[in-house]
Length: 193
Image (tube, rainbow, N blue to C red; front, side):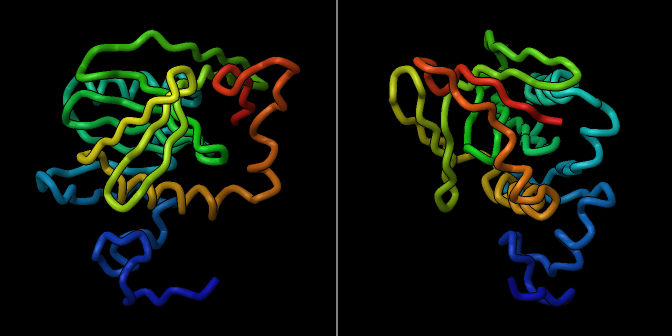
């Protein structure tokens, strides 16, 4: 991997210099301008870990932002949580690209997230992929695909890059517990800390 100079364009694609964008993002809370509405968006890996301490706490925070129609992107371990101005909220797991929709147009969805000190169990509903400015999800059950154009894809990509820098590849491979015989994806345990 090539070294990025402080004054070079940031590799996340924001258009800002590296020193004004992703440099040191993990150590301090950074405010970024949302290109679509010029509103301030909080993004911080430390914020979720410090304030929430649990996946449930982070989920509650992102649901609150979705109900307020705020665009917010947060990370916790290998997880990314984001909300949109339309009132949608998602939980993403970056190693297997699993996704769980938490809110849809301001309405809370019925989801399964169980947590104890050693593991977090999430019943993932979708897989996701990012393509240019598109957020694309595929349902595990119906196998149908949905494409969202107004989601904060650049910020999600930047968060994924930050996670890859922080989490050693060997650890990332230990996130998912192997499926039991006959068990389908979307109903598996994830050990996240």
